[in-house]
Length: 234
Image 1 (cartoon, rainbow, N blue to C red):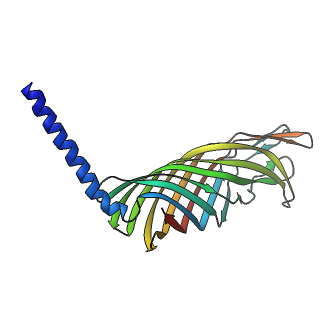
Image 2: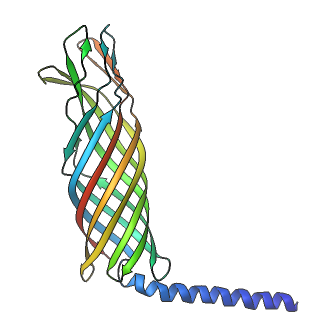
Image 3: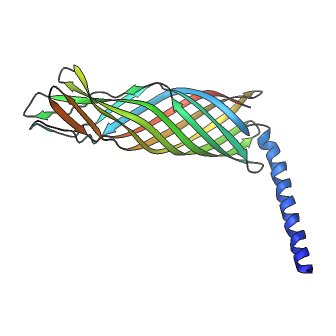
C-alpha cells in the first residue's frame, strides 16, 4: 500500500510538473503564434508535367513529352498551432490554390502523321499538412511543412501550329507536400511570412476522344513555389 501511495505521489508530481512546464513554456508561444490563423499568399510557381506516355487509336507513335509552365498563384491557408514548450509549436493546416495554371505545349512529335503536342491545365489544388515550428523569438517563427497535396490534371492536344486544344481527359492525383517557412509579427496579431514548397504527384490516367480518335496519356506532375504573404492569428 505504501508503495502504491508513493507511486501515486510521484506520478502526481510529474504530471503537475509537466503541466507547469507546458504552461510556462506556452506563455512564450501563446504571446505570438499559438492558436488559429488564416493567411493569403502569392509569388512564383513552376509546374512540370513529364513522362506523358501518350498513345492513340491511330497507328501513329508519340515520343514522351515534357511540359512546363510558370504562374503567379493565389493561395489561401488556415490552421491551428499548438504550443509544445517554450520554443516549439506543432501546427495542423490546410491550403487551397485559387487560380488554375497551365503548362506550355510539349514538343512531342507524332511519327507518320502531322507533328503536334500536348499541354496541361492544373486546377483544384489543395494541401493538408503538419507543421512543426521553432520560436526564434516571441514574434519570429521558423517552421517545416509535411503532408498531402491533390490536384486535377487535364490534358489538351494541339496541332503543330498550336491550334485545336481538344481535351484528352482529366484526372485527380495526390502526392507529397513538403516545405519550409518563416513568419514575422508585423503588428498586434498580423504577421508577414515567406515560404518555399514542393509537390510531387502520382501518375494521372487520362482518356479522351475527338474526331473519331481516342487518346490515352499517363502524365506525372511536379510543382514548387516561392511565396510571400500576410496572415492573422486569433
